[in-house]
Structures are given as C-alpha cells and as structure tokens.
Length: 262
Ligand SMILES: [Ca+2]
Ligand SMILES: [Ca+2]
Image (cartoon, rainbow, N blue to C red):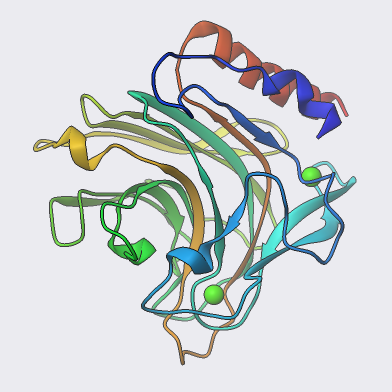
C-alpha cells in the first residue's frame, strides 16, 4: 500500500458520505493466507443462490506481470461464488482498473472472474441479481461486458472482440461508467506493456439511472454449487476513482507509471 499511497488522494465531492473516496490497493500490506482487510468484504455476504464457505478469497504470494514477487488475492477452487466487494459512494462517474490473472478456466457453465460495479436494490439480494456493469472472463477465453438493470430487466452481454486470454497471464481490466447517460467503456490491456488488446464502448438504448446507482466495487466468479468447481483467478493493483476529472485520471496514470518503473 505504501507504494501507491500517493494515489490514495481523495477527489472529494459533496453530499454522499462515501462520494469521492478513491480506492487503491496492491495487497502488499496484508498477511498471506488471510482474507484481505481494509475496505474489502467477502462476497459471501451478497451470495444467496450459490454460497461457498468463506473466506472465499485469500491473499497469496505470487509473481507479477514483470516477474517480481508480489501479493495479490486469489479465489478458492470450491464450487459456488467467490469474491470480494468494497462500498463506494453514489456518483455520476466511476472508473476502475484491476490486474487479473485467470488461473483455471472451466469447461462449461461458469466464469472465472467478473469485475465492475453492482447495486444492491433489495436487502439480501444475490450478487447475480443485482444491477451491475461488469467485465467478465468466460469459459471460451473471451472477455465480455455485461450491463444489467436489475435481474430480468434490460441487459446487454457484449463480446470484447478479437482477443482470447491465456491462463497464467496478467491483464489489466478497466471499466468506465457514466451513470447518467448509461454509457460504458471497457478495455483489456497487457499488464506489462499497457498495450490495449481489446475494448468495447456501449450506451444503453433504454436506461434508468436509478438502476445504475452503483454502491459497490465488486469482483466475483460464477459457479453453481455442486458443479465440479475449479475456476480460479488472481487479482492485484486495484484502482478506483469516482470521477473522470483530469486530476484523478492523472493519479491513475501515475500509479500505473510507478508500477512499470518497479
Ligand atoms: Ca501486489
Ligand atoms: Ca468459485
């Protein structure tokens, strides 16, 4: 954390208690083997349909995109939903990026990891039934942008074209949202070089901003309970800013630049 503390600057809005709070975490400050502390909560608190025993993600010692030792968080391989979430404030704009490594891809029926924004519109609601905008890795080794305005409501499931991921490789997954316009921008970059590998923009033709009032930065996999299990992914270098303002985007860029320099 200390290495990215400069990017912890708050781009403060007025109003909502959490509005404007940025998140930056490289997971270096947590002991390996444990659930990460800080702002992170176990996704098991948002899972109803396919629960698994927590902690559903743990801090591990691993190797980063540059071949250096690093700490990151990894999902368990048991069937059921693994993940973490952090509360964020109401905002017109959200921007997140996270380094993702797929460690194991299933043969069918599940996704190794989804990253993005969710909104719990009803108490006790399962994460998959929440309004959400996420980028997820699918069993075909493709990434998709998924935008859903409540379960069963308007939804879009969009392939990020022309790219298939490789296991055991770090990618930087980014997602920007304008919740007033219902506009979304997703990209996958090579985590080592920063090269954009695929991207997709989308504006919802029918959009209800009240169903895009995201309250959580959420990372979770999708596996039915009782399946063979086996999906696994590792995440590192989380960055979230609630505004696309030049100052905050510069902080994100500086964080990325600092990582590449290490
Ligand atoms: Ca790390
Ligand atoms: Ca799982």
